[in-house]
Image (tube, rainbow, N blue to C red; front, side, top):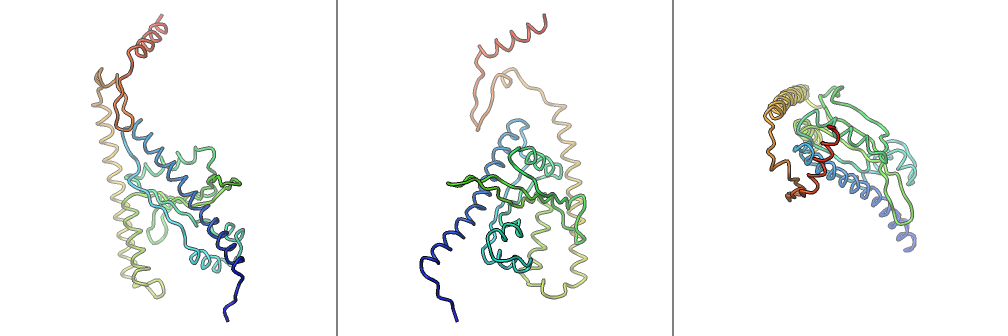
Length: 255
């Protein structure tokens, strides 16, 4: 028999669960803004973008409850926060393996972010071949009446790693093979594909480093280029007065 709850009680619970989920949504918004700033600054300083794209997701209330049941937690908001750390998830896809660790360090160096856990499945791949860098990060979220430290999962991987993980996901879930024995041949081919993706990543990394070395050797900036800065696709000429100050400062140092 369905339990009939008072309308006010239903409204209150709806508001509580909505606010709870919004807290994680705001954490995702905060992290995506930080990533956009890092990318823009990195592009300006190094003329290079280490991030191909990002993707975020929130677990549904149903998915949260199912995971809570599996973990044996009681149904309460504190229990959910304690047992489930990946309600909010952000996936960052990079071009090269080295970019993964660059982005990871940039996030770790932000003083108001707290890295709770790090799992490096690149240096230590899972038995099935899965590779990625996982971080559990506490993000400060400012609500209207309080500040919350919200835990979310950040996965950082290359395009090749992401392509492989997407394929494995489709095999196990789209075709519903997770509930039956997966053929040994299929598992072996998945592992071989993971090895191929890893080899491709290492080859592309070598090519990337070689190209960067060539670029540095050939880098010559004209006087005109040195006298301009570019921000948000807009060019700004450096004032002559500012250039004279720099020149005068250098002359004083030479004396």
